Length: 267
Image (cartoon, rainbow, N blue to C red):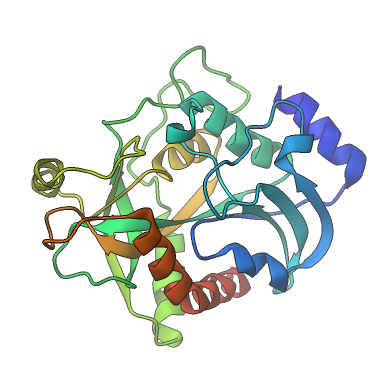
């Protein structure tokens, strides 16, 4: 399937991106800063999952950004939309086929660590994946990676150091922590958050980990940053809503975009 998708994209552009950025909530406008060479809607790519989440446009944008060959995913797909982990992994393998060697992941997440505040950024140092299906279940494709990939450096340590340096030089507060992905779409219960905190999670969301596992499997360097869009259920005595997440993402958007832009420049 990836071959068909790759052939379709190559029929439109022969541009070879080295860096891919998956734009989470609040980052869609970053696409406006790219010098575009080609824009392709997911719905036009054979067998490509289509984003249905609010504000996720569903486009691949190829172009030059801070002097680098990049492809931006303006919108991602999620398990809660009815897609499988394997379908999400197929997208990462497609990026690999197109020439990508570095993947920058972003998301909006709920803060579990009580030291965090809404609008903070968290560098993901590790993740907890035991609540979702691995995208590697099923027959292994040796063309992409080994049957049992090592996850001890899932979030590339050199890339982590670069991201921390960039944040420091630009006076952007950057927390560090462990991220856990759940399936959603419902927010977590207070008891679930208490459990996740006991397990060592600092933030929780509904994306990113599946993409990371798939990327590590096929040899991509991964860096990932969460924007804390809300404090998780039970941390504050306040109901959660998708609208609050959208408002927080919009407010933090300019600084988030600056951080990603400077990271790309430094790569």
